[in-house]
Image (tube, rainbow, N blue to C red; front, side, top):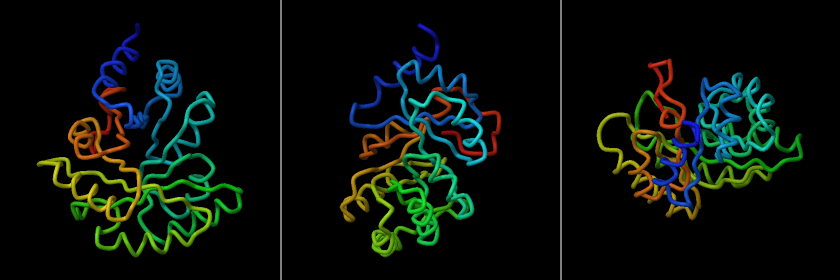
Length: 215
């Protein structure tokens, strides 16, 4: 058993079967992604379109890909082409671009709405109070399927209240998925109802860039 297989087995023991584990592959080379795929991890998350455009074609076609980073409208075409699920839709304008490109591709694009649940100035996402109106507008776009909500909790302090608030909002809206929880806080996220966790460093090791949040 190699180290990656052992790491994934240990991690899976802490994650219920109904919770989807997304392995965050920012800066991880294609050969390591293929090793994780061989070890049983099926779904991977990328933060940057340019990195994904180079990496995804170099990885086995059995892998499924989610986009989890901030998405600019001018990258919507690539996002539709590359990803099964886009976690980070943070405006009606971006949704409109995705809908346009999904229609051109003959695809129904699955998405999550990103919510800045803690109101942090440094983070992207809809304000919680703006989510119902945004959802109503996006639900009118025929090529998008809104499946749930996503958030990134503050890196310091207790994440639980933020995860709980997102779950309550999800329940009010009648949605299914909750993408929340990373390497440092996923157990709490699962306790509060996460259906998707995004884990990078606990699988692949610490990132070299210390200026970005570690998944």
